[in-house]
Image (cartoon, rainbow, N blue to C red):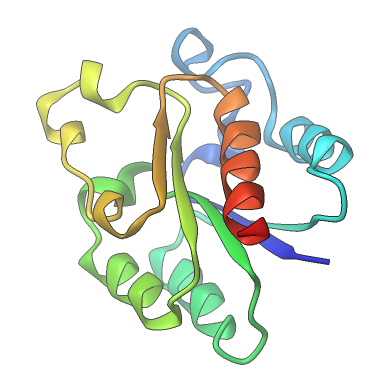
Length: 145
């Protein structure tokens, strides 16, 4: 059974409350419940969200001792700022899909650069929370070979 870790960066704990016109009305807990119920057959999901970059990096480092088969990551603001996050993801060498709820390319100019995109299997942006389901399906197809 493939294990997939879904990582969410800063401010995503505020889903459903923060700028619902951009990020939608769904809360993070509800998103996790929906993804868990609708994951591709046989896929085991775990979730982690933090507003602290060091905690995110430590969680990624743990994958060296307890690996997963795939990662879905919404790095949020760290997408555009964190070389440390990128380095941690490279170190574990696990297939990953980058997800953004909004279309980062249609927003502020600084949001158009990602330190993660070029190491990801795919980047899904602007599909709302449905992007997470697309990411899981992308990983599922990759893992099936």
